[in-house]
Image (cartoon, rainbow, N blue to C red; front, side, top):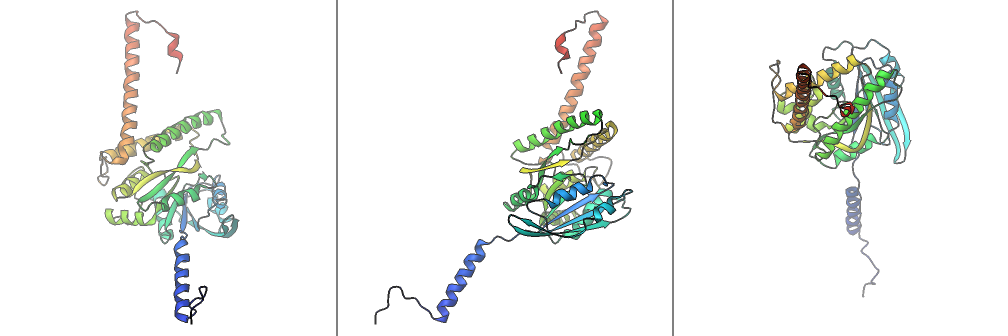
Length: 344
């Protein structure tokens, strides 16, 4: 008897094979959801911690867990953050998402921010990715989704920094507005230089950056460290960025993720920050007074640092030559004023 052309094999073996093939096809098309933890080291952040957590809770892609690690605080940071502790179930276009917030008060900690970051790392080590968030940084609503999508697109990436801008809202004085304008220009120039260098980021800033947990483990193995962040340098994020690069991973700046960071509103605070950054950079470029800091003058991540410091030296020399020429011209009555000099 001839078989009808629309007939099919209904035997149990054939149905089992067909069902298995269909399950494999569906499973292959489903991408696993990466687990993401946010670690928020906080020190006297009572004025900003609520806005930071609010910004994390309105993300289009919520993290799976948020660890607020409070250290050496003398204000109400713990009490304010404690109001957010617990589970938050929120509806998003992709579906219902759940995030759980934990608040940890670790008391007095001699390692300060480094100790808080490492405390958070060991709490979140089971996640695929860890995002470090400063206690005064507010990300844009799509920042986490953008960072996760970018780092998952290439297994060679060890970390990605967001594009930073100084928050210029609610500035108390004219001096603060003036200083903030200068800091915004500084951050914009730094971001542009890294974006134009193939998005290769010299420093994965601690303000808002995502790290591959595997990359951090590899750094610990290669450097024989007990934790990813160490206090061998004044700039712990720069040192970790160098170590991630040396471990064979890429360090990038995001093309789309943005975050607003707190600025320095007083001249003393800005001076202290700039001195710390410059001293730490010099220490990484060449061995400083600490014997445990390995100088790496030719590390790829330090090329931009060399450019910055050589430009600073050139500016100092130019100004010194100008004043020397001015004094020499005054001494022989050859000084002639030109209005063009008033143009900055």
